[in-house]
Image (cartoon, rainbow, N blue to C red):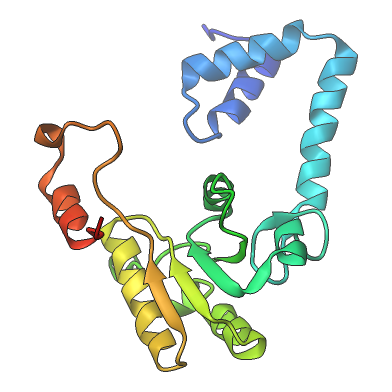
Length: 197
């Protein structure tokens, strides 16, 4: 005997396709939709469809936008570019109110073991931006993983040939963390990235 009638089973299946949504959470979402007013469900479905139809990548940086060029590229300093892995990383970086530069989204990282090389991420458009816009500095803000470090080093090597200043965001011990609980890799990075007081 089936646990759910077909329309509910199908709705649970669709919610289960979302990242981080298991069967229990998908079931709660399905029941929530069923219990909503029809006009609220219509609005919810319409919002999803409009987002899918109208949101695309900025033609300059690769961030999500509903226009040809995103607001950050329109108003911020084009001479400083912060390179990130995914558009969601821009949201985190924008919390730093003093940055004022623009971004470049790679849409992935170099990962030779899984067949991802330089042509599979957005490196070529970055090089084109730099050559056209007299960029002064590129800040590498990829995640501190093996792939993130390899990607940052690869891009830095390419940019050194162009005479562009390349920097890497500092990494290390988080504020409020007890040193005794910090792993060896993080402590090593903290020592290497130390600053004079």
